[in-house]
Structures are given as C-alpha cells and as structure tokens.
Image 1 (cartoon, one colour):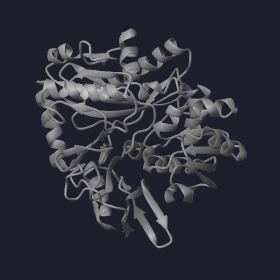
Image 2 (spheres, rainbow, N blue to C red):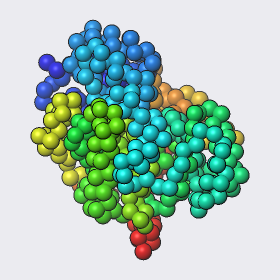
Image 3 (cartoon, rainbow, N blue to C red):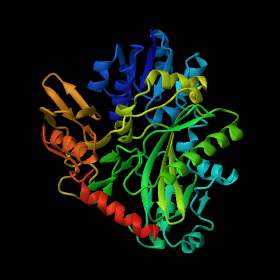
Amino acid sequence: MIRVLLIGNGAREHAIAEAVKRSRHTPLLFSYMKGNNPGIAALSEKILIGNYGDLQSICRFAGDNRVDFAIVGPEDPLNNGVVDALKKNGIPSVGPTQKLAQLETSKSFTRNLLGKYGIPGNPKFRVFTSLDGIEEFLRDLDGIVVKPDGLTGGKGVMVQGDHFQTVKEALQYCKDVLAEHASVIIDEKLEGEEFSLQCLSDGKTVVATPPVQDHKRRFVDDRGPNTGGMGSYSCEDHSLPFMTRKDVEEGLAITQKVAEAIYKETGEYYKGVMYAGFMITKDGIRLLEYNARFGDPEAMNILPLLRTDFIDLCRAVIDGTLDRLPVEFEKKATVCKYIVPMGYGLPKDHPDAGTTTAKIEVGDVGRARLYYASVDKRDDGLYMSTSRAIGVVGIADTLEDAETVAEKAVSAVKGPVAHRPDIGTKPLIEKRIQHMKKIRQ
C-alpha cells in the first residue's frame, strides 16, 4: 500500500488530494495542514495541523506514518526547506529543494539564470541592491514593472498604469522594497496576453500540462485590485483562443532549457512543478515569472483532466523516468470561479472591505466540482475567513458549457459572497482574441 504525505491546505491541495485518491494504486493519504480543510480531511487517513516552518513536526508526522513520498503544495514550505528535511529522513518529494525553489522565491535568481545560459524569454530587466542607478534605468523604459526579490504572496508586483503612474512613484516603491528586501527587480512593462504553463520535471524531461489563463483582477472586465486569482479557464483543444500551437511549444522549450540550466548551475535535478507565467508579445513569448508548485486556481483546471495515474506520475518525477511515462489529459474544457467574501482583495477604504468570518451554505452544485480553500467546518456549518473560500470548477466538452456548469454551481452557494461571473464567457474571451490580433499585427 503506497502511503503519501500531502503538505498544504488550500483548494490547490484539495485538487491534488483528489488526484491522489483516484489512483489505481489505492494509496493512503496523510495530510499536514496549517488549517483544517474539510475536503482534504475527508480524503485523508490522518491529518495534522501545524506550522509550515516546523520541519521537525512535518518529518515526525511523515516518519510516524511511514510515508513513501511527499507532495508539497504551497511555496512557503518549499522556501523553508521542507524537501531537504524530508530527504535527510529518507523521504523523497515531488517538489524542489530549497536551493532550487529559488526559481520562485528569488526572481533575480531566475532572471540571471536565463541571462547566463542564453535562454530566450527575458524582458529588459535589471536587479538592484541599492538605489544607485535605479532612476536612470527607470527613465530608459517605456513602461515599468517593479518586483520585490522574494515571496510576496503574489501581491508584491507593481505595474505602471495600474499601481503607479510616474517614474517618481516607481522610485518611491523601489525605496520601500529595498527597506524590506535585499534586492529589487525592475522589468520593462510588456504588452500582450498572459497564460500559465504548468510543467512537471524530473530534472531531465519536462512535460507540459494544458495551458490555462488566470484572472487576477477582483472585478468583472478585469477591473479593480489584483488578487491571488479569481478564477481561470482551459480549453478542450489544450490551447487557448488567442494562442497558436507555436506559443505553447516556445513556452515548453524555455522551461526545458531552464531545467537543464538549473542542473548545470547547481548539480541538482529539479524534481517537481515548474509553473511559468508567460506573456505573448509582438516579439514572441516572454517570461513573467516561475512558480515552483502548481498554480492556485490553475491546478483545479488541469488535475481533474489528468488521465495518467497521478501516483505513477509522481513516481516518475521522483525516479527520473518521466520520459517513459505517457502523460495524457482529457480533451475537455474547464472553468474555475472562486467564491470569495464580499471584502476580499479590496482596499481598506472600500465600503465592503474588512468582511469578517461569515457562515455560508452550499446547495446543489450539479455537475460542478468544489475545492475548499480558506474555510472552517464547524459543528453548526461552514465558515469563510477573509480569503478565498471555494473554487468551483465546471468541466464539459466545450468552454461555453463548462462556464454554464460553473456559474450555475456558484449560485448554489448562499451567504455574503462574491465571484467573477465573466470568467470563461464569450465577451471576455473575444476581448482577449481581439487584443492579441492587434498585438500580432
């Protein structure tokens, strides 16, 4: 009997847990979470609630339950070195070591890696450890993106035109970043359409999953502040309406070269998820950033479609045999819509900001799948926190039908909740198509 440790407690990890339990190997799942996710708990033999920085507790839990390998969901335990600690205890992981997790945890590491090994995809950029030369570089760019060098929960990137307008404001943000971080990265602002390409790597072979488009903005029609992600969609042809097959091939080629460069640079094979955020520009594919784990919500789009046994896939990543395993996905479309509290992602001066913990009720969601995120199951029902609550996923033969399934399911959740009804709809997708046509011309 295969025994698997899952680290993480979000909707992404709920989707991972479901993929584990679908395996023909009938594995036993043991989950280490910082909060009690009822969806993961229901699929687990045993759970332990603890801190992701408590590596000793994680390793003890793994050892006591004689797990064969671990799957690491979120970035924090990777940054804390959980893969290294488990490895010392003889337990392999689907997830990179602390050094290799710099692919996500240090944006300068990734930018410099691409530059050193001549890998295409970098925008014009520079890394600064002091204010010297920053203003001059800012004035050289047509548009500015400022990024702290480190983990910021997906909310530290500031873009000219969205978060600030002038060079003076950009310079002030750089000062603020350097007060808390060792360095700041400044990129040129790119024009185009973004897509997520989540790949699995055993260090030598890289396999792509279907591309997904995420929606960071809080409100309909991509308005309002950025969030951790309000939802996402994927298409039945394993492309996106504004993409070409060449776009996917270029993205995969970049990730393959990055995996090879990481081995050359560190002597370690990258074993885990290499999730790239790309932008299609008039000059081709450009890399926005890498994450060292599945995306949230993007994991919920691709894992339910996985036809290959997930345990076999994890074993191939760990054993370095990914080249021998056919990795296949259902030819289905998916739409994920996040149910969030009314005040989620809003500035403090917004009238709906500061929504407190509230009870919600889930009715008949039909054919949709629910993935629990930041919720608390109590004796008297299900409660939200102030973060994303439930990922609702519609799966169907067409994108239109998948959106219908998801939207209908959202309406079955009652309480002080909000969502983005436009995700996966024709008007928003047509807007993306026309935007990309204009860019390519």
